[in-house]
Every structure is written in structure tokens, then in C-alpha cells.
Length: 214
Image (cartoon, rainbow, N blue to C red; front, side):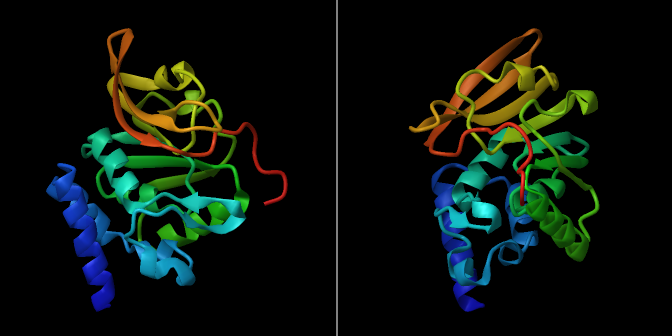
């Protein structure tokens, strides 16, 4: 337990060094037990910057990247959020403590079911998990105030940004599948989009369809 507290304190120090100090964001991370979303063998690394393996050959992003991304979204109470790539469910759980509703899409049925079970056990009731193809977002359920995608687009994701409400924000990696990408913040201003680059990342490309087996 002491080791976990030390790891979390080191995580907070790294965030402070990056200018991420919002109290509501820190509280949301602290209130969402990260170890509950990570395989026991990797729990000592839960608050590290490393990506960690989860089931179905996927991975949970490092805590620092998750914090940077959620911070950039500037989530406010009442916001409706779309997340593509639920994974273990951790980031949806954190965002649910900041927003009104989170809709998270996962292409792997096993991961979607596990995420639902974790939310139920933690009493998180404002997350809707969809086992679905998130390649084109959820246009029928938009607009969304915020969108986050944990997989890379090879070019500007216009079909997603069009699902934003006016003044809405999307954060996603943009760049080639086999190389580094840029984590970009796209803000909808009238009929145009303003882009701000946040960091260099390397994530899997966004895939079409649902997983055939898992």
C-alpha cells in the first residue's frame, strides 16, 4: 500500500511538472482505483508512464498520457463524451467522475464485458459501454461535447469532428500507423476546426469492424 501511495505521489509530481494541476482531474484519478483495471502482475507499474498489456492483445496507456489527454479535453459537469477504445475501462471511469455521461466503444466483446463489470462493482452508473465498430464514431448519438480516440488516424478525422457540438473538443493521435503520431487537440469553432498539437505518441491505428473472435 505504501508503495502504491509513493507511485501515485510520483505520478502527481510528473503531472505538476507538465502543468497539469486541476484539482478535479487529480481527484477523479485518485477516486478511480487503477489497480482494479490492471492485471495483478503489472499492478506495481500502475502509475508509471509505461503502456501495460491487457487482454485481447491490447494495452492500457501510461498514466501520464491518459492524464494529459483527459486534461486537454477540459471536461465539465454535464458534458456528453464519446470514447473510442474502452480497453480496460479506466479512462472512461475517470472521465465519468468529471462529465455527465460517457459513451465508450470497444471492438473486443471480452474487454467490453469486463469494463461493464468493473463499472458495476465500483458503482459508476453514467458510463455506457458499447461492443461496436467505432471506426466512424456514433453519428446517430451525437453531437458530443467531447470525443477521445485511443487509436491513430492517418489524416484529419473530419467525420468524427463533425460529431462534435459547437465549441466541442476532440483529442486523438494523427499520423502514420507504423511511425510516431501527433496527439492533436481539435476544437470546433463555427464551421472550422482549430488544431493544437500536444505530444508525440505511438499508438495502434484505428481499425474497422469488430473483433471476429474475442
